[in-house]
Length: 389
Picture 1 (cartoon, rainbow, N blue to C red):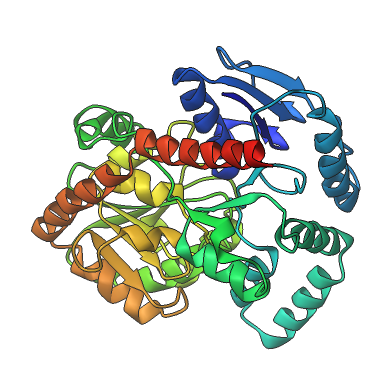
Picture 2: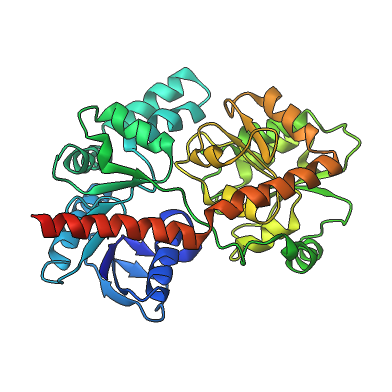
């Protein structure tokens, strides 16, 4: 197949949709497809993949969103592609993957991260009145309300439900739920004896320390503050635990809170980790108490690494986790007591080990190869539809 992938940035280090697009492009190329990527920027060439620079306005933000949609439409014209897949803000495609979920669903949850009602109100007004938000909503309507619009690949049932809740006249048959895939070789329990040991030494972590990993690029949305507060309830526990925070973000507000709660020496920030498998190999538990995540890759990567996971029900990845078997779910990130209890339960090394084994078993159902095969099925569906017209 001759496939075009359209995204604003092609950079695996950013994680999320950008990292996913790189993995998908590589996998499709490896399976013999002619892959073309249209993006505004790229972190570097990818072997066997054709890169096309996509002209876009960088500022203001609403103009960036609009220029992305318009330039993408123009760029792929005449390309004679069998399938065109878009990632965010691209209405005129055959397949659309809303990796970031639905704009209004994100906003509903993002507002909850503000602790005061007044702050929530002002934040809500600021967001809904911004031209970027208005533009994103307009583009989503163009995608979902068009009965002849693209097939939607939702990465969780949660995302599908959000789409149908907001766009209730949409045909649900247009939405295919395909969970994210994971590289089962790259993320493997054996990494603990190699990558993990070196990382612990580099970051000053003791062999007997129980390392709790939080890894994200949006500390506020992903629930770092309630996690720190939940852990403060365990400061007198006999188990020596350390919270390792990896990712992009300003640590100051969280360091201040940890200091106020008396656990400053238990929280270590290591900034962005270029190889997530290294951080996962160094930890004993991943905690991701997110307020909103369509499907968190790091949770599936942790499971593949043999690491038990605690996450919230606001995470689409919770659908592949077996409660009490391969990890734990919390009803809401703000339920700090519930989160604390479930972390404490996994301070038992035997329980962690058994859950890690079960986590790996669950992850093995969602290999990257299996995921790409499901995406190819959607592509075939598109091609058949075009031939029938």
